[in-house]
Image 1 (cartoon, rainbow, N blue to C red):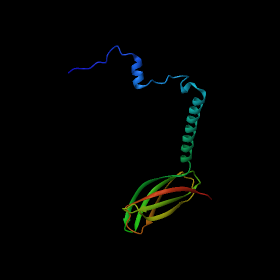
Image 2 (cartoon, helix red, strand yellow):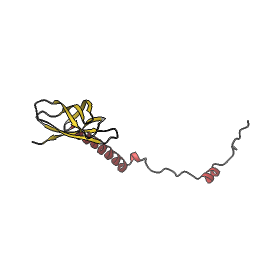
Image 3 (tube, one colour):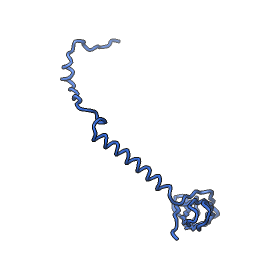
Image 4 (cartoon, one colour):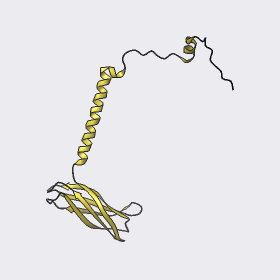
Length: 145
């Protein structure tokens, strides 16, 4: 196997004429210029503030978690869930039952009355129009007095 080598006496301008010359870099890099640096710092600060705002907004209000559920029969589903809220806050939760094609076959609003306890467990039965395969809490929100 033979390898071809480029001639050693090729002037550098021949390659520049053939492939073009890279533009010479002038000035300072972007991070040493005040305007792009200020824009990058401001963008980072805004992104951080947005992330903090989202985290705080999602941490407010009642939270819920499903403990268990079961399908009782073709017209009834049962769910047991927990609600965490500020003591003294009444909460309204939407519970829905779904069939095997993910269509809603039952919907129930559950009112959780205000109490001194932070965590409350509820167990409810949802009437359905056809056999459900799952039931879950869709949302919970505080109820104004």
